[in-house]
Amino acid sequence: MQNKQNTKLPWNDYSSYIKRIFGIRVQKISIDAGFTCPNRDGKISRGACFYCTNESFSPFYCTPKLSVTEQLQKGIEFFSKKYKTQKYLAYFQSYTNTYGKVEDLKKLYLEALAVEGVIGLVIATRPDCIDEEIMKMLKEISKDKYLSIEYGAESTKNETLNFINRGHSWEQTIKAVELANNFQINCGLHFIIGLPGEDKTDFLNHAKKISKLNIQTLKIHQMQVLKKTKLADVYKESPELFYNLNLENYLDLMVEFLGYLNPNVVVERFTSESPKEMIIYPNWKGKKNFEISHMLEKKMKERKITQGMFFEANSI
Image (spheres, rainbow, N blue to C red):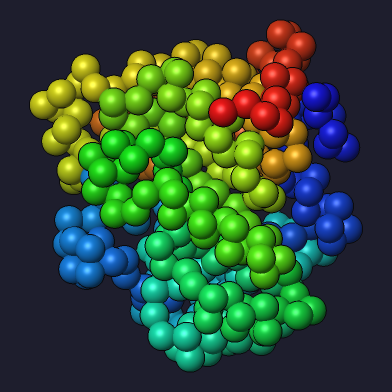
């Protein structure tokens, strides 16, 4: 099946997707609303995921010391200086953003939607922290707004999920996606490529299994071993568990991964940046996401591979 996206890129990119929906530039603004996670507060465990440290991806304005409104206003002030004509999506990013009482969640989401310029919500959560009551509320408050739920799936292998102390299964991810589908709510997944114990066959199987689900968006990023995490201890003690994630290997892997990925899935990203001083492995010498995107585009075009080229609807 050939890639169906209307873009010059060899993958179905997020910027083009947003422009098709809204016709203008739309910027996500991250929010830390002070949530925690069930594998941090003791409901599942207190150990958290092995790789977890929110220090690596929170912008300066994203802090629970500020209200939702204040975080959005500071984010809008920052981005409006760079781009004059645009709207905004309130991105509830940090930790598990549906982990609370429905009435409390509704208040936070409505506060975000009331900020001038905000035209929708993107809510990051876990697949085991969503239910029909929350979905009904989300559907109700977003009738004329954009809404997307982003589930942290991370892997399709339950052995991996157990090892990294994720606290949920791949089957729960499937059910969470089906629940979003039942309510006709946009749904995305987040995956980490390179988790300990997984190899190239596993990574390509992730692409095939993801492709069988009715999702709109996908975020992928390389596994990063960061200081002050349990993953750093695992890496120190058992480096043989880790796939060789030098940049060339990762790019080659992404070429094949995207080749197997359903062409209708919008790829938001396939790399992530963390502060250089926090990274133990892999060392990509400070390469920025946009630089890596250009390198991947070049490789895919040289090999004449586009997203979905190897996709088979009935595989796996």
